[in-house]
Image (cartoon, rainbow, N blue to C red):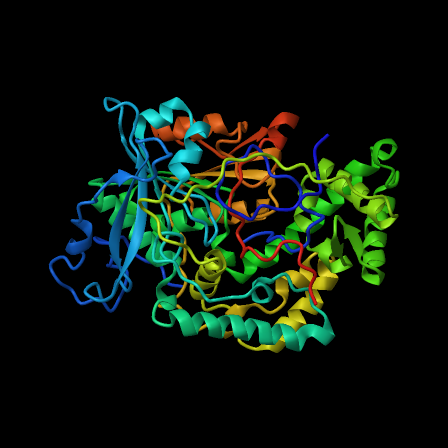
Length: 544
């Protein structure tokens, strides 16, 4: 039997075969403009750039010093550090590091070029992706491409940012409570102020547009005219922005579990609440049909009532799950579990047993390979780096965040009524209300560049409507929807969409039209472990 209730492991990019449901631990992170013409260099989209013969030559003509990333890793896994400008409008100014890795194509005769990889986030490190993705990719892809990983600017080994946040400040899962709202406003302002105090000159430039420019520097340094790309979750938005800024440099792009560029970024948090409601309804229907197994009710209404009764009970007296006290709000924060109907049914049964005083079994921890820090290459990364990088991108990418705290209060009250499971969490105040503007407005993605979008029907972090939004924005793309697919991350999970993606990467041929395929039960349970598109938060922390 699958173990449902367990302590989460954070969101490191370590490969696993599936992600277990997380309903029991409430504070786990459940996720995280003008049209730009084609350009001639990575700096070109910045309007105020002083025109020179080649202002980026010092960056694009670098010679990377490749070396073994780590003694314990294969010798074929190599790392280098490149320099990029903090501000592409001032290429002679301050510089940042960008850590890059590679595993060369296995067939020099068949080699086509490079395949850049991004695991998502924002704030997800990608330096080790060539290692943990290699077993998931077919031989034909690895024969043709050098697999290229990189930590985006501000993340991991790429001049990592830190805000010096303590555990209480990392706890971003905040439901709306009238009595707590002033405290939540103070929290949001404090996070923004601490980030600004530590990174004031850097934060405006930790944006998706600048990371896309960094990708183009990587392309140039590697001597490639075009770049191919496999990006998951937030990586789909990064890839889409690259296609908008550098359409002539774009080769074969696979955008997996997609972010809707029209919802950047508050809307992408709010879509978790919107997407959770149909998932919850589907779960009640599925579970009612299996009343003899789970005993939660033989109609959808009874199953839903059983869950909400547990929420109300936990609000009166928190439920003890292996020493962690869960309130009703804590339980609601686990909304992502309802995208896995069987996992949710088992989790709610365990929760009910705990509420009735039956101790839950000890969690079964899957043995996973540790994420090694290369001793010959790496620097120490601040413990709050992923959270700091998330807020830097989410707040700095767009100027659409409301500045009035009362707007967040009104929206949270409205959305708790619309989306009872998670609406107030999604719309409550965030540090972006007090963030200074990034260096540029958000990118308007609207192009005809060819790309392949992959999307599970029941993705809890980037719901189906999100993938459909990216498909509308990228008119030259094609989309494969995995009906019945559960999980965040399609390609490499033995999905029915894998064959189409592999054919595209190896031949360049997109399907003639959008496709659907249906996941088998086994495919629905086989998943990748990706960084969630959200700040990490504090697992198991009861909110005071």
